[in-house]
Length: 152
Image (tube, rainbow, N blue to C red; front, side, top):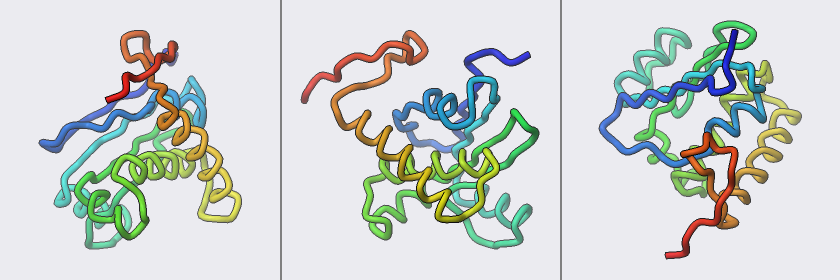
């Protein structure tokens, strides 16, 4: 029923999307059978969704919606994430990576806890160092091959 490439990325903002290993993260955390949508939205839409589902009248960095056992959606607000980088002591890409992991763990059924924090740390370190070590996902092959990034 599900194919291996079951991730849809939707950009409802005018900004460029970051280069993160979304498919690898999804397969590693949620499994290859999981169908995931990742939507990037503006602050107004984030606020509207946050109010509708959580009764909180402000934009938020990430929202997770589990639609079924093997189907879910992440809603991310890049502008909100950018505004929180200093607060968390991370670059935009680092914080986005962390929030994608955080959202996926919620989709997996985890609640805020020491166990969830340990899982966040494990995946963050795995993919942060993977990305920082000069390796990048080869998008032309669906991320199956790894190649060295050219130094600038």
